[in-house]
Length: 218
Ligand code: G3P
Image 1: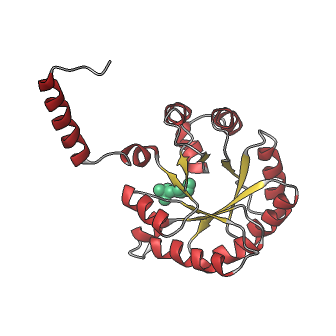
Image 2: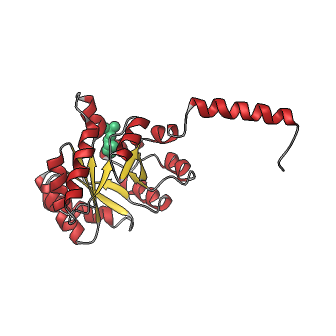
Image 3: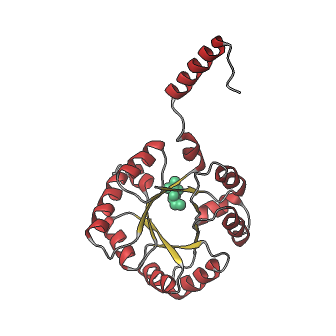
């Protein structure tokens, strides 16, 4: 499973890249707003830090404008994935931009039928939003499972499932079990993945016992 980080905070991305666990980055207009910097500048910096796909989202809602914005964003760096919303215009723009040879991440996916359309439009990634479905009392993880089932039924559907709107480490674990190809994680969730109280407790005990031996490995 690949890990992307869901943020436009450059210093945060730099720090996480050092872990060797970062395969890409996703951003959206809300994250760009949070970063408080010009989008093109931020995306260019991120694309230099990370070799893998960096999603940059269009804000137009009409197909031709989406295509124009997508081409402009894709020109920032070779590893840009143009992010498009799951609308008819977005799907048509997806077909055009993947035809140009660009990576496309179709976002705001809340049903397996939508994911099927995105795959038929040639999307590189589909982004089902787990947390926002859970927030409504629905089962976000079921959506990942359903999309996996559908995509596995057809060899011609090559779209990768990018589990998005992840809120917890359990979401990451369950998305991996459900067969998501990628998970995009908020930085805090990525950092938390390593944590377990029994790991801390066990290490403390090992080090205390080692101290008693008076030995040193080096
Ligand atoms: O980038 C899309 C997605 O991950 C947003 O997550 O937490 O705003 O629902 P969230």
